[in-house]
Length: 120
Image 1: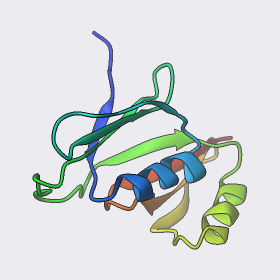
Image 2: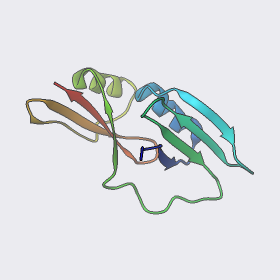
Image 3: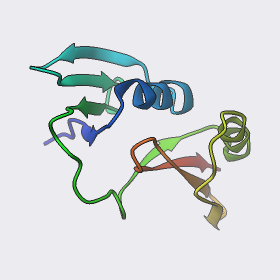
Image 4: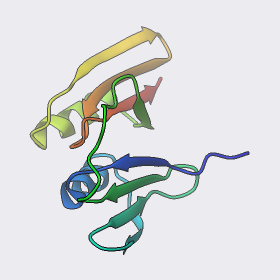
């Protein structure tokens, strides 16, 4: 069995695409309409795939509390600078629970926690 993708229901496709392209660094692999007013975008390549679904007739229920998507970066300190330059806030961290890893979290436009991880 292999992991296919993580699906996120979004309120605004353009805002979400901007975040995942400019902040996370994922490229769009497919973007298409899937019925009246429904738009789907896939981002990423290889084992890293995120699906964004925007459907004005579907209201998001609940929240994404307790779920985070982790993305490896070369430098947590440099990524924090990028986050601040883009006008975003660090949700939590940075943390370094052991000498080999350092990470922090931000929220995407839909409230999903995104973790940026540096392997030291």
